[in-house]
Image (tube, rainbow, N blue to C red; front, side, top):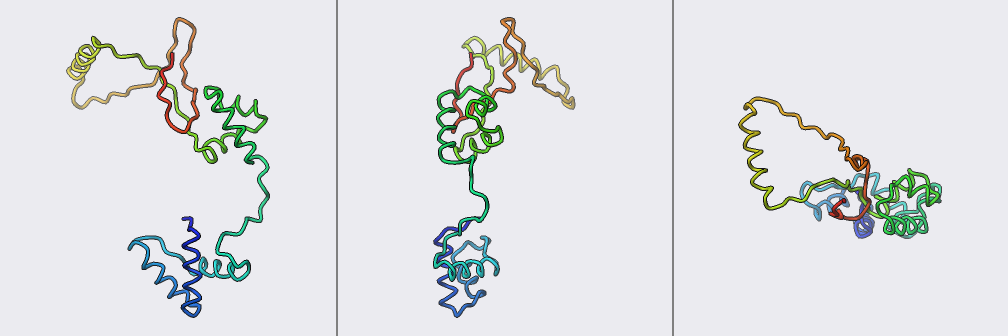
Length: 183
């Protein structure tokens, strides 16, 4: 769980007010949290206090690891622009066009931009005359299937006479489901 700066400040302040008592700090912190809420362990409190003594701040220290060189704000903005400009282009082609690896692009989309892949589905518009036929088909199906029979529906590929094939691997990246009709 990630703790807010207010939580950290409360812990450090309580620790110093109670004569450097970790147990008393845990008790006071847990009284402000729900009964079954997550509480802090001794190591975390000691680490936050040591961090406060070193830096004078309760905030997290910057990680000593390598700096990001691919998921930079510039690349994130470039990916956002490219995806909003042509959202139907596959992630592989987007990565190639932007000069990024596929893995980097697939990290940027959900983690930085909060985009999710949505699958385009081929559906047919239901007309007014289709509803009675649909109900009749369901009733016939229920009459013909015995109560203990196992029915396994399958997703089969669709091949159209026009040459279009099965948009099964097509994903549309967006923040929310676009609910578009595919023609």
